[in-house]
Image (cartoon, rainbow, N blue to C red; front, top):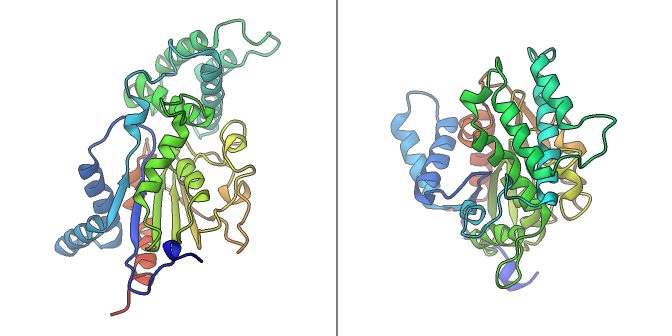
Amino acid sequence: MTTDTMVTEKARPRLVFVHGIGGPRDVTKELAAWSGALAEGAVPAGGAAERADLAAALAADSAFAHYGDLFTASGAQGAGAGADEEQAALTLDLLAEFLDELASLPGHQNHRGLARVRAQLSPQGEAQGVLNPARHLSLMLASIAALPGLSWGARRLSRVELLGILSQPGRYLRRAEPDAAGRTLDQRVRDRVLRCLDPSRPAIVVAHSLGTVVALEALAEYRGSVALLVTVGSPIATPGVVRPLIRPRPPATPETVAAWADFRDNDDLVVPKRRLVKAVEPNSAGVRPTPHRLTSARFWSHDATTYLRREEVAGPVLEARAATAPRS
């Protein structure tokens, strides 16, 4: 082990948050919100002062890996009418998997409008490419937004929000959009995560949604110690589009990760039904994701802070933080 990767006995653990889809964020506010959500999950109701102290302590020794601005930078490509055919086709595949998850939920299994839109998305017996993929994507998003009677529906997710959920993973996994130095969008996103890590200290990485894909790939390049990787609302196991495109292939627990806890809400539409533990190979130490299923009974359960407020999620993070803290 080299000097720059050794973790000294006195090193304090560093908590690194990795967000999911979305545009530019206020890092200070996001760090406070995520730390506060973890504190809320760890401290029982009524312990407001203790909760505030814990949130402040977590935020003081944490980092928020922000990359949302990379998707909205001047000249960045979208996934709507201006997207090229390859990018739009990838987003259409993600949309198909999203609709399949939605259609499988109780109450939606016999939804005629949803079934009709799904059939229009991938019509059987027709040659692929009758419509320009970007044009097809635009029409499908409009059709989905107009569907009546869905609990999450147009009032909950706007067309722009739905496009954001679907286009950013596709753009990341496409490995394109190089900058002036030739570094592709996915490389620049991972750079943001790696900058937040300190190889001289043990890390606890908490990643959400697209951020779970980013964290998995970034940690594959990382040489420092990761005491715990926590993934919430992860699409890594999505079989048709996401999992086959993750690097390295097949997806595997990074060698540097000592433990991995994965949380999925039963009502989270972004998370495929296939368990992550079955989609990821173990590392040489035998570490693979430990699955945890949650139920929030919310119309939209994918928000990061919704997960972090759960005792089941906050507990392991605080335990790992205590176990890796320096002895007094």
